[in-house]
Structures are given as structure tokens and as C-alpha cells.
Image 1: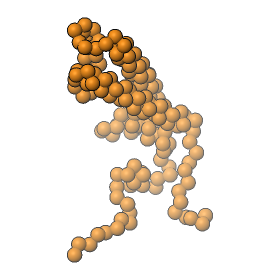
Image 2: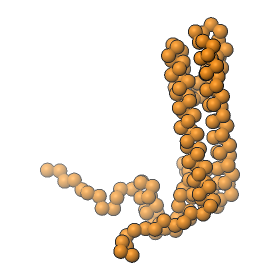
Image 3: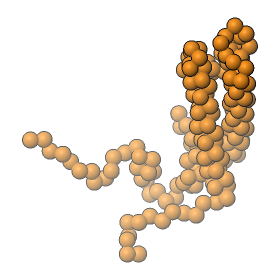
Image 4: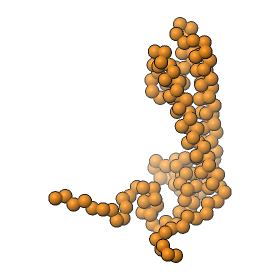
Amino acid sequence: MERPKVRFVPIKSDDQLDMQSLHRVRERWIRRRAAVVNQIRSLLLERGLTVRTGRKHLVAALPGILEDADSDLSGPLRVLLAQLQCEMKQLQSQIEEVDAVVVRASVQSDACQCLEAIPGIGPLTATAIVSAIGNGAEFNKGRGFAAWLGLVPAQYSERVLSV
């Protein structure tokens, strides 16, 4: 009680912890998928083959590149690119599975359904918010929640006077 302005964090339920774990693992898989896509693009670029930026463009172009017998790709590089393509597909599959779990959890949660009524908030954002703050009882006002998200300036910001 020596610090009256310190807010205590409520203990999270097992469901909240599970959902936060899903979001963390999903984010790691997305970063890994982006790294694989960038590595494939760079390997192709080293051989003079350019592919438009974006995962969907690479997914569409890669099968044709691997099957093109006239390209200067060596056998070992084709095998490596095919393995990276498999890794990319596996990561995509894992991400889609987690997305399905998140959507199911969102449908079953009344709090998530209320949040999804707000334009721009979907199942991923709703489940992330509910798993992070629960029912939001630790916020006295909506402004406190907005400040927690970083959407409003600090209450006592320093004013700069121009001379």
C-alpha cells in the first residue's frame, strides 16, 4: 500500500493463458513463414529470377519455376527450393489450424462477440484482448483501457512552449 497508484494485475484463467499461448505461437509461425518466403525469393534472385513481393505471388510462381527445365537452376537448388516450399506449406497449414481454433473460441465467448460488433475488430483481435484483460474490471473507464492500448496521450504529458 506504499504505492497507491500501482495497479495489480488480475490472475488469468487457464483459458486466457491458453489463448495467449495460441496467439504467441501463431505469431512465431507467421514470422517463420515470412522468413522462408524471403529466403526463397533471395535464392531465386541470386540466380537472376525475380518474383513479385508477397507470399501469394511466390506461391503462384514457384511451381512453374521448379518445373521449368530451361532455367539455370541446379538440381541441388531445386531440391532445396522444393523443401523450402514444403516448409512454407506446413507453416501455412499450422497457421490455418490455429486460426480455426481462435475463431471457434471467439464464437463461444460472449465478450468476444461484443468486441466483434465494433467495426474493424475480428476474431483474432477480440480473442487477444479478452485473453489479455479478461472482463476489463481493472479499468474504471474506457479511457483507461484506451491508454493501456496506447491510443490516448498520457494524462500528464509535458507541454513544449514555443518562444
